[in-house]
Image (cartoon, rainbow, N blue to C red; front, top):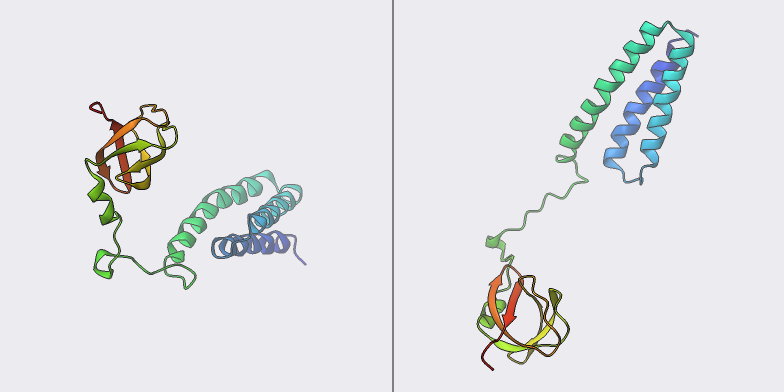
Length: 160
């Protein structure tokens, strides 16, 4: 058996192992295996062939591994393993609860200390709220200043 066959087979196995790592969740076990294949292959090339061949194989590895990773991640989008369902407003998906808008300019008091997030009782309803970075003690009268996204932003109520 020629001296170049085993390093070549190890390099090919490493490439397939990297591709398998992209598609199969192995918590890095396949990556470690691929690294072992590449490392042992480079060791065999280093100990058997002249240094120029070692540097050539190392250069090919440094170019081929990132290319395989990029192509593999691009292929993942077309794989049956990937999620292809898109959620849209036409399907009834909303990113903001329409119910939160009714609390705008509502009043209440903080149940927990807001630093800057916590819980408050606004118009008789217990809500998760945030401040604009202000520290507010529990029991402080509040007013809903703004509703953005899924956040209810409160500020101190000055007029009690």
